[in-house]
Amino acid sequence: LSGSWWWGGAKVGDDRGPIVGYLTGSTPGVFRNDVTAGSDRGDATTTAFVGRSGRGKTTAMMLSLLDAGFRGSYALALDFKGDLGGLVTAARRYGLNAHLVETGPKFAGAVDLFKLLASEGVDVARGEVPAQLSVAIPEWLREAGAETPITRAVNEVIAQGEPATWKVIEYLRNMDDELGRKAGEALYELAQNALGAPFMGRPTGEGSPITPEPGIFVVQMPGLSLPQPEEARRDWTPMKRLSVALMHSMLAFGVTTAGRRDLRGLRKVVAVPEVHVLTATREGASFLQYIARVGRALATSLLLDTQDPESLVSMVGVLEQLTTVAGFQLTTRGQQDALAELLSLPKDAHTRALIQSVGLLPDGEIRHGHCVIRDRRFSCATVQWDVPSAELLTLLDTSPKAADQSADDTPVSMEKVDA
Image 1 (tube, rainbow, N blue to C red):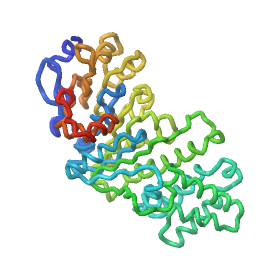
Image 2 (cartoon, helix red, strand yellow; image 1 turned 60 degrees about the vertical axis):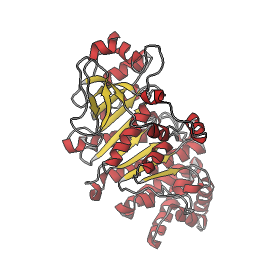
Image 3 (cartoon, rainbow, N blue to C red; image 1 turned 90 degrees about the vertical axis):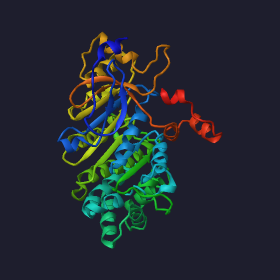
Image 4 (tube, rainbow, N blue to C red; image 1 turned 180 degrees about the vertical axis):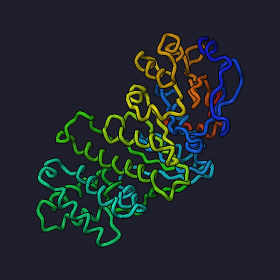
């Protein structure tokens, strides 16, 4: 009732672009949304999908990524939970160039900074690789001065040609310098870890690298254990060091790709599900604010998916660059008020009631994909995201239930598609 009373006659969305849903107020209409159009308009380029788990926000983001892919964009998704594999499956099914990179030995070297930053020349990697390896090594080695032999090894490997991080580690292991050898042995052992292999492991030839070209690239990093901002570096566990170092690869690649002059004409999209994983670290928060601020100039759009609107509200650099907000159901007052701020709605009982009830059917069951949209004109309306087919919904769904359903060829119910 509150939704229909508030939003009768409201209209939101882009004037052109793909139709991704329909208005649910008293006035019929469609919702168009092109997440890549902000740069062409000279407008902001960040879209946020905010709400509780299981309400459809991640599916809405994946649909937006598919639309971007069909429009010739390069789309990079940093998948911290490991549940976006269906996006690659769907993209391939419909003819898009799509690749999945995972943590583990199969993809050893797939996100080696020497490879990711090759287009920028070795000077960028010359600074980034030592910084990354200095994060990965045990703190006692760093405090003993291991950064010096690491830097020397990087310079020597670059001078030899065809540099790679695994070659730096081998050079360290064979150094006359005892500290360098200890650093090399520590890094070699860490490279056998699932989180260490992608950025410093010796390539096996099995995994596909990520390259800046039209298509969809999903980098799955389940198991990341990032430290809290206030946590002292000396207290980081090996898993936390590797997590930060792996994230360093992806953030350096994202920033460098966005800024490449030869790619200025290519539409680019960086998607970050579970964005609170990044906002919990200084490096991650800085990356998000950088991409949000420079996205318009660099033709790079940023898609954020989070259950925690309060973390976004605290990031002024992101808040000022929002072009579209899709607000799904939230149930606590603090989170509802934070979402109200993102939606540019008053923080009062009416808004909280709307956010509490959106995404629910009259009988209290979940209405997947129903949300409040705030567009670039700061107009608001309730919208239902629309999945084009049962097949696509099945491909995007990577839950255990979906896997069982696929295995026994049980058709997807139309009731679920309508929801």
